[in-house]
Amino acid sequence: MRAVDTNVLIRLLTRDDAKQAAAAEAFVAKGAWVSHLVVVEACWVLDSVFDRGPTQIAIAVEMLLSHENLTLQEPEVVEAALSLYRKRPSLGFSDCMVLEVARKAGHLPLGTFDRGLGKQEGASRV
Image (tube, rainbow, N blue to C red; front, side, top):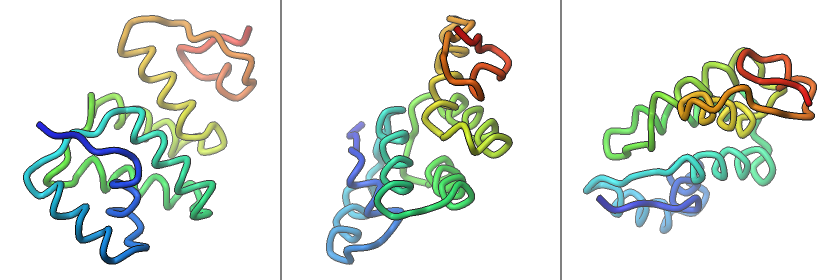
């Protein structure tokens, strides 16, 4: 299966460039795989470049999870990160993903200096 990078996802989610959005749609129409890293980068771009808030970012991740032509890497991990992010948006989606990837891999506790993340089940403040 082919894969996509961050800018393809951003075009699908924001439709800020009609020509590139159409090209992105055409590319993923045959199916495409999306890595954890690309999901995290896309959330960062939505926040830092497009000034989207936690609710909009959560909706974007939900759209990616339910997209008929996209296959996300370990979607259950992304869903778990999304669930935590919805409860604790101040953590940021990337920290939620870091914790859930570590949980899936069986490498807990996750050591962190982050106060908020350190309070989450499976994390330990260093």
